[in-house]
Image (cartoon, rainbow, N blue to C red; front, top):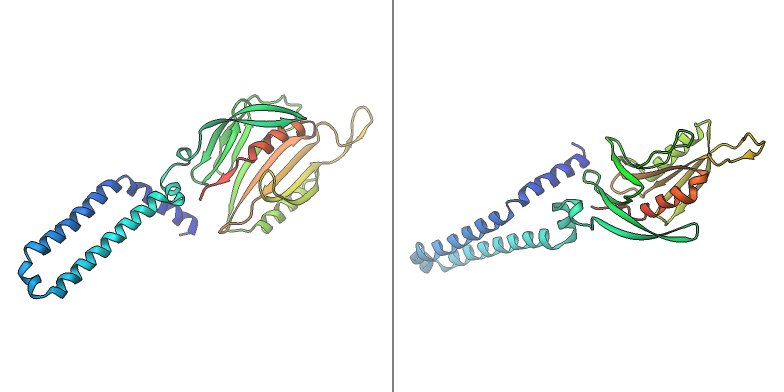
Length: 265
């Protein structure tokens, strides 16, 4: 069984056992109480004749009680413990307003919390323009109102790769871009915004338009990848797809949404 599958099974088991936590606590205390009173009443004479044995039993019961209390407190009080027992939607605000800046103008946007319980990540999505579409291998943030066929694709895709490293994923992305006859590798750098990651960008080739102008055109596609640092063999890749004319529109909105991306352990 892989470590990832094992972790999932452990989390599911813990979530199921949490439902009975109150009952378990009461039952544990009852057993401790019974043990104490039984030892003090039914075994009074034997305890009097052998006080070391009595105290040994009380010490064992006391240590067991302390262990139960510590376990319950750890699960209830630590952020990590709460995160393991709760759904992600219970840990974050469902909706809020964010101020963003597009082409020099500030704008208020309404964002909606989107989560993936299996991959354990959250992201806030502009609910007026985009929607989250969940898939088996990746999730996509797509336009609510699709563009006409003459426009290139616009979406942001979130994927996770297991059993690999950041360097291996970056190399694979670069190879994919270089093997695409209609794309070229334009940029590769370490970034801290909108998230801390390795950024790789591919761009469509220059061509001559109907007006005779050669170069990158309004509809030149842009594929931008953010590759997170490897954590226990897991790497997230966020792929942004838009076109040159939409760089300051959809490209900027993707940037602001990605700032809210967070992996919850």
